[in-house]
Length: 362
Image 1 (cartoon, rainbow, N blue to C red):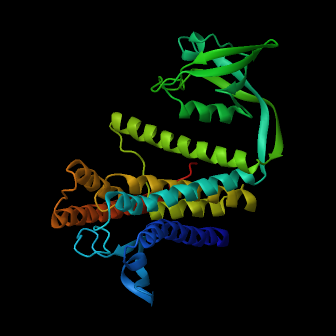
Image 2 (tube, rainbow, N blue to C red):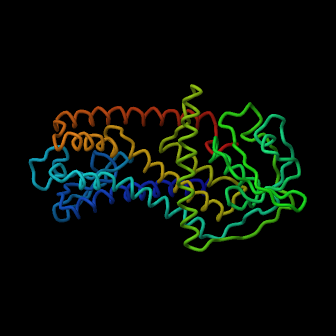
Image 3 (cartoon, helix red, strand yellow):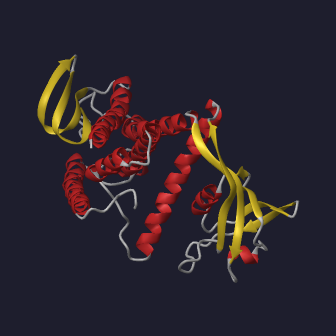
């Protein structure tokens, strides 16, 4: 119980750091561009406390669902040091700096995870069975084949193969297979929508002669793997959302309450040691930071990305802007809808918790 509480407190601290990093991106790029920043706030009003340094008020606010950087004239260019008075390029840089910093934070966390020595299960990834009519059968794969690499990536265990399959659904992949002492390259295309119970390629796999080794990576290798993980997470998320919408099922989403639940489950899972709990928590933190980056750059009114279409319209119209009042109204309506969505997701999270359903599975 104590460990669970510690991890929830840790989650709150992590979320505060991620928000701070996001808003710091806007803040420092705005300051460097000469934009007048009135307030740098953590959380949304009402204000709990604050202090002023120079022309900027730094505040801590009551609603811990985000943060903000308040600049002079975000839609009104009449003030020379306002954001709206800057060039399209400067405004683009200020707006996109927040999501960029969250993406950079995700890269730092993923890289750190690869730098830490971790126990890895290593063995021979072996095909146990091949279903008739499956992509694996069409590619000529046979039971007993050992899959040594996929697209040049060496495999430690069958989990590595499953991960690569999910990241490459619908794409032709080159598998390096060992068969009776011979090395073969086989082209396999995992299915986007396989028949129930068959999987993308129609094979059953296992890890033979498994052993556990401790492994870490060099900094440059860890950074490359961190970047590859970001690409894979974004690709998998987009694909799962697309598949859910295509099948008429709403994608599973969660908010701050659900994230806190995930951290609580990590903290109280008896099979995890302290090292495993910390690594899982850091992985969740990296995913949350990446999610903040992607979500905030989407063209949704009231979010950072919601301002980018107005810059595009201005550029296409050769400097002719959308009226400031009209843009402000769009963002106000978007903010109201966004808050409604946050409340709805929070209610769904609470219902799941009261029903005793886990967010991490099991």
